[in-house]
Amino acid sequence: MSIQLTPAALERARRFLQGDPASVGLRFGVKRTGCSGWGYLVDVAHQRNERDQVFEQDGVTVLVDADSLALVDGTTIDFVKRGLNQEFVFQNPNATAACGCGESFTTQDS
Image 1 (cartoon, one colour):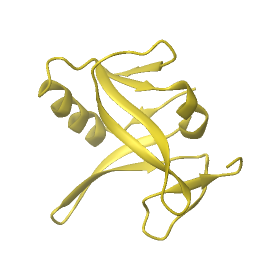
Image 2: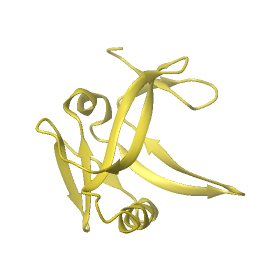
Image 3: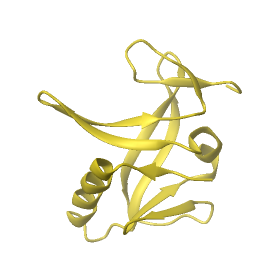
């Protein structure tokens, strides 16, 4: 099981976490949303939950809740700038389709 961050995503995550001294890491998961079923969640985590899977990469802790793990296992997270927009981009080997707007995805099992 793994979650990987590109150098750009690592740098962005470090900046987020340094701006919040109470943080314990970056929370990554999914929720039901959009037209394809699942949307990604990325936020600063302030506590570790008992069922979290914890990934460490170059000093950045990524927490993934147990319910999300099967849907995001193997995902590479990147951070890209496109013109005035900046966003995390996910390369998820479990995603079998995505909606046209890119806000949600589906998997074989969903």
